[in-house]
Image 1 (cartoon, rainbow, N blue to C red):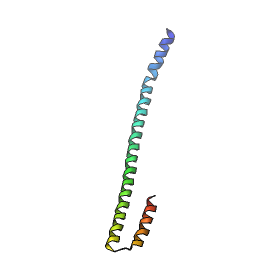
Image 2 (tube, one colour; image 1 turned 45 degrees about the vertical axis):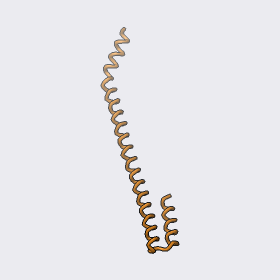
Image 3 (cartoon, rainbow, N blue to C red; image 1 turned 180 degrees about the horizontal axis):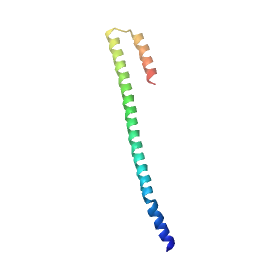
Image 4 (cartoon, rainbow, N blue to C red; image 1 turned 135 degrees about the horizontal axis):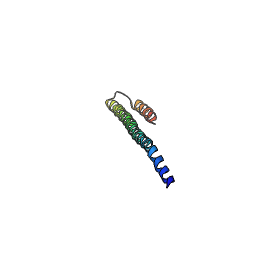
Length: 87
């Protein structure tokens, strides 16, 4: 019986500290999750912006070729360079 009382007394003594550490752990996990979501969103938008810019440039090259502003050879060279930059 005395051992049980000692265990309960020890639990009561360490319970507030345990709750504090559990709360800090949960808060840390939540903040980490939010940070990861924010970083993923930034990376995805950066990739999408880059892809849309490259597509826009390729479309411009096609228009320039069709309007006679650049030759077919220049178009092929610039297109190959753009494709290489995308990889």
